[in-house]
Length: 192
Image 1: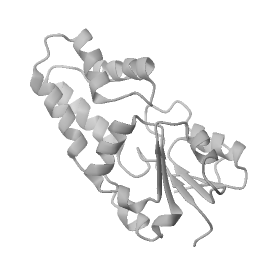
Image 2 (image 1 turned 45 degrees about the vertical axis):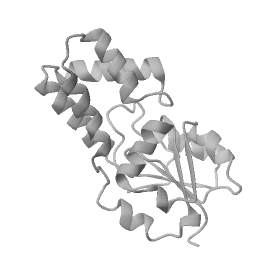
Image 3 (image 1 turned 90 degrees about the vertical axis):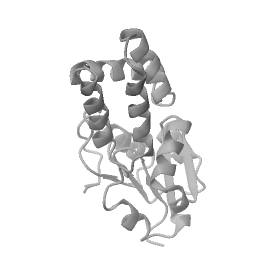
């Protein structure tokens, strides 16, 4: 093995959730919803649900309260995005470099929402252990061994992991997405 367990995030780490979010905003604009309004609605939904309960169903409830006359086609189009592939070009080649037993996926997102993304991208088969709907630091504590690597896009999570597991190499991939308030951290070991 290449230095122990490799723990990975899902959104913006393995799949391009920023591109999916931009596709959502494009659909919204076709139905007369500005990008700014759509972003406000999504932020409101996150405030109400948190990451572990966020889903399109929760989002649709908030949209329905704010925009009650929106045609049903809007919701169908948005939901269809879960079936689209948004994998980064290097995701599968990277995962295939390692034995399944070495790879762990940890996501704080709603388990049903995340499972739909995993199915659409056929990623489940690459991981020996998948934990969803739980704080990433707490999830890492459930592992039998301290992870050798933690790979994610969010500086706040990389910092929290590094503070708890100081020997774990914390690697930031991509740029933090627009919805991440913390854009950098001195605790990150590497960026790629």
